Length: 102
Image (cartoon, rainbow, N blue to C red):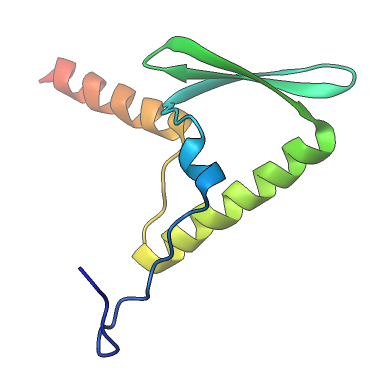
């Protein structure tokens, strides 16, 4: 659907052809290791390792900061804090303990 000037939604531009050709990968877990020259990240999907990613310390830190900024934008806009994986595990463990007591 074409955007009109009266529309309150911002106009979206199509990504460049190079972007369209990139492979897409969904991950819901990860592991991290540190070496003398870089950081290694193992990306996982449902517990299965799907990609090994090696980053220089500079890129790892820059990526960490940028991802944090994006999540903070979401949290500010929604008024809610996004739980980390560790927080979700603790929450689920507490819920399970309560269920087992009942």
